[in-house]
Image: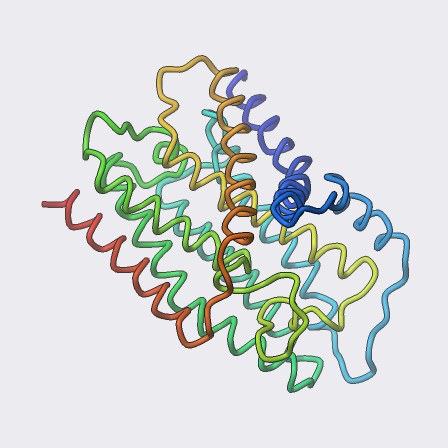
Length: 304
């Protein structure tokens, strides 16, 4: 019973704190730029404002456009219940659930892409094609990295995989470091962050994710923004859980360390976006292919 309650609390914590992480990223970027920056709770204010507005739909769109944000939010919400956090097990866990999480992320991407294509806009179609092209390399990197973690932990469930690795015992430093680098690259790519994409750009030659949601407004756009924040939290929880050995620590210490790790990750993302430029589109596949190669090397090291 205690385990179930802790799992429920950690899931609720993710739903509540996910928008705050993006505020930390933006505040970190503001500090590096010498600006005061927007409030840490800015995304909460934006979501509240958008929910209070009405949605505008083009006459060329169908039910697909309206279903995209709703079903996408439902998909990421289900995925949140599968990913453990703070040393607690996932609210739902079963053998092979990490494949299911990857499929849910794929469903989310598919829904956003078809919603963008449903507008009939060639501009949004351009962003959708880029999103699909890059995801073809990001998804294998994610699955290969999680497969290496599954081999190291001898488990196919995220609840047994995340937070169970040790840097001093078992497979050693190299495979865990390779998996961590792979997951970090995938984290940046899946969340449309620099160097793969720039969430603040509005140049048509460089936009990927932002161009797909240009026609959404009001509550629909609020759902998309909140879904993106939850995706940031979910992938960050997997990355932090792999890199931080939490086994053997008291439950409250596990939770506090995990929360601190999430905010540290948000600061790191802000530092990355403040110290390097966005890659050219032709260079992004090379970055993701390198992440795939690192995951393959890690898998080779733990299998041999």
